[in-house]
Length: 395
Image (tube, rainbow, N blue to C red; front, side, top):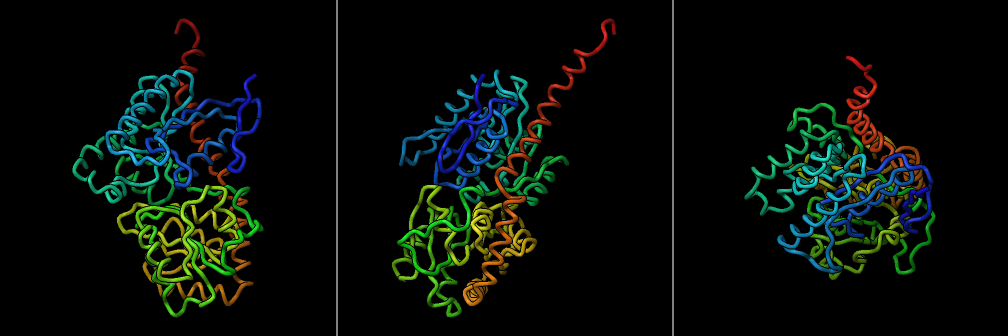
């Protein structure tokens, strides 16, 4: 009997249950690389699905370590991943796609094999054009390919209400399921030992340095007079805004840039912070579901977040921190000062956030939501065959 592995972020694959509920292929046209937000979003869901009794195989492009591939190399690697997937489709019950225009080849192969396709949508095509401006030159083709994928899908999962509303608008569908991102509550938890090199009291920012993450606002807030003199800023990650972080660290001893850390090493940095900053904002984005929000709450750390859909409503509902106006460094500095002056308030807000993750916002809970969508799509695909097989002879 085949044993289904479970995934643990700290320890890797370990033996799981012997009962196999189904077989799923997971396709990502982006490389799944540790240290990037997409790595956790993919591997945590895959691991939780495996723990639930599903065999899951991940297909994604692969590159040599440290290599930043150009467009031809990326296309070649995506085609190779698509071919590998094609060989496996005859033995799976469904294909789960992390939505991407270049997943088109994988989707077409699944359609020909009569395998139901479920798309997890993390943003709109306008988000992609903002991230990669050169793609605007082929915008009509990108939109046509993506719209066709969404319309033909067996099911659509959106990671925020805003993205769900956008999907319904551009596809005409009304069956989009909302399942936001989450946190590994076993890895990101309170009480982790504090790394020795960290300052006594600090605000943490971690994750992707995309421009819409608005680390520029946090760096400005750090320089405001309202920001307490004894509170440092610790930054973990990498991305487009890295030069801003490096310049701030060179100017001020109160800014500590740790670079990119392995996934498991991020949690102790977060768990020992005074507060975590989640300031995502960009008017052109359809919606947000930042992993750092749930991971901070999971660590029992209060959150300072911008008043942006997909994050602010969770902080307010759980009373897990302070919501500030977008693009307002003065408000961010004042919020830091409030939490630094009232540590009891900070601890209580953090504890409420931790309870919310344990009850509703863990990756285990998110994976159960998404598996329910997968299983419904598989059942719908099989239904006509079952009806046909059950029909009395002679009809």
